[in-house]
Image 1: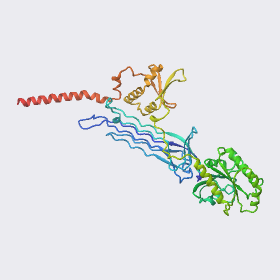
Image 2: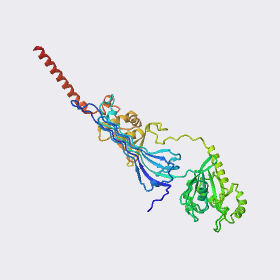
Image 3: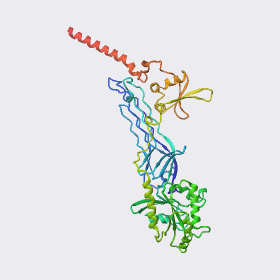
Length: 487
């Protein structure tokens, strides 16, 4: 099956790269097998970024693309070698692309400016190596932090053409011909219905005003019920500042006349919704045809009762086109002047955890039933959930370090305040698969014991041997010096 050339709505999964794991390594030299921690940090995973490219006009590049994935960060290595950060995956999209979460329907971004960027999936942070985790109280950590997983989400991209003026009307009313006559656009034009299968866009210059004009293909009566092509394309004029009704004066279809055509199209616009405040103009097209002028004269009194400006035009002879162009330019200029001054748009990215606004506490704790008559203490919060993801639960020192971190922000004290007892189930993490612990408060153990968590025991076990070796060396040199003195 052939891939269509114009696609204005797609859905696919974006997967940011995972951060590389930190390295737990010990520096080694000759005669110095345990020289201290030297594990490097893991590199950050690549993010998935949407960037507006004004040379694009379709989302066809993402048609039937089920997954777009950024690279993972490299893990850290020994000798203080940090893992490389992964490159971001940049996906170019047309101007006017709306990004939404396909599962919740939440609109994430509306990309309307060339070069504008949106981080749709944030890459995972790399884990710290044991060299970075060392400090005065924990000189030799025998563990490192894991890299965080990158964001993953299903997104929907929907294209809404960014045009100043939208042309609406029945098929073959001359919308594409009008765009071709007043701009340099060259859309496909023929003398049969539904010639236009995609919205056409043209750039028009009228005096010192430059603006864009787009048409809606295939809009007919019943479009709101799925007939024809136009209702699905009406989104492309939602951003327009003015709507021009292009009315065909050369049709011979029974039941068709300018006033009826206008009422039918207005009914479809109303059914679509959201276009009530747009300025309307009426363009009576094909004035070059026989009887067209008579039909215009007959229809004008009824059309004038609507209070809308009326222009008699011919896309073949050019009649009335300048007047229409400059009137559209006046409307666009006035609407632009009423808009607030544009400010440069920064790269849109998720707010860092530590700076997320609206968070009064670093965590919350609630007692939840587990469905079996028991209960669990559910801990939620950006910091504790992030720390859980960074912890290697196969390493006892890493688990001890996690316990110290949780205790430092007051989770253990809060649990005790709420009535938690040793052995109670405590769940930390988002979603349906949190990490569950048996509550074992460390507050009463004492600072001396807590200070030893996260220390590589190999260094501790080495210290007596080193001290004994130094003592023997001292005794040897003292004996040697005594013998030389006697000689």
